[in-house]
Image (cartoon, rainbow, N blue to C red; front, side, top):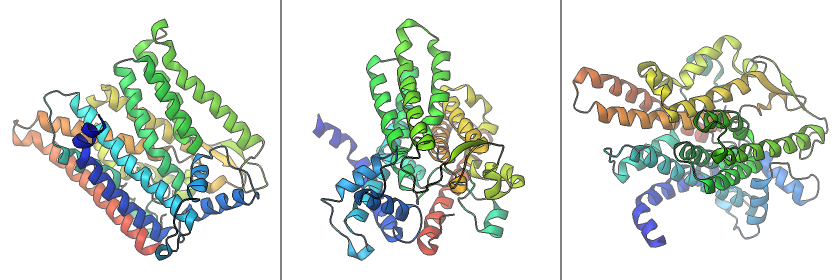
Length: 401
């Protein structure tokens, strides 16, 4: 069975491995220069030295600490054993993000029995997804050199915990969609496990998931006794989140600041500070130009369960960022932003899958009908170019904002 899996998926492993190697080099070069890697490194060192405790979302730091015991150093990148362990885990997460994207693209395309795409095609689509980026607002980029900050982005290079948790979010989306299409009792255990692992790395996406998934699940299965266990992963996640909330905001466990923070409520308090309230509509449009234009051209896509699911995740993510923020020393850390990253990525992924399906439907139709597909494909390519430029900017200028 294992030999068969490797035989059938060798091309995906090659693409994924190549991407992981590139990310290891890129992140290794930037590890000591910018981003959150240095602060996460310092946190692990402080835990090792008993200066502070693990935070409630400790899993990444815990794995990096103990992996460093067997990790080599890498003097060329000025990485010690812990630095190599951290970069290795992040690079592995990039590989898993690519591979889980492949699984998702394959699954949705295979739902259409008449739609067969080659491994190379699926690999290239998946690779394009993992490197694409939002298109920055012109006036914010030219005026304030802002490319990422305040924008709705599908990926980041500088924050290890969101990078490590994103593959789990993608797989959680895929398995949840499968559960909505065909209920299986055993799948609830896997969904619960993925939810817990995500919570233990970065809980942001689960904050959105526990709102959206039960609503869509309810519309499909109602409160039928046969399907009640499908709500168990959500209930379990809510209880876990409550415990984490108490640990973070009541007991201040794992914080480097002695002053406690608390959750505040206010419209665009932090987001408006980042980019200016008047710029937010254009930021939303340029960040999400491809999927929004897809919905504008094909509004009936919203009645499809995968599009509705992904769009709802994004909508709730944006509302959380718009209304919630932390009061205290972490106010402008933007910690209620992070759920946007996997949600935007999933929205892009579902949108390009739907466009591939639409292109197949219009393949033998008149040219003017296919123009919409070409137009939307051009916008998608712009996002890919933006992602390449953002990576280049990050490497050459050591700037992630």
